[in-house]
Length: 64
Image (cartoon, rainbow, N blue to C red; front, top):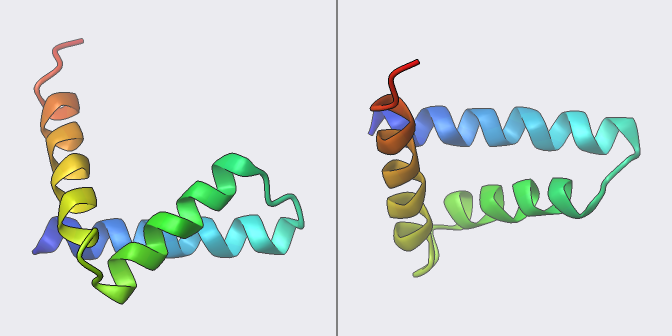
């Protein structure tokens, strides 16, 4: 639960920064889409959440 709240907050901050800069590019739009999936809790949200959780697990297991 703590990870998904952190992801939502991070995505919200990124979306606000991108919109305020006026430079909404394709990668920025992807962040906004991810935020939309999390906030709307659609049927795709669990799949996206699982993918982000798996990615976070992989990154956290990397040794420098």
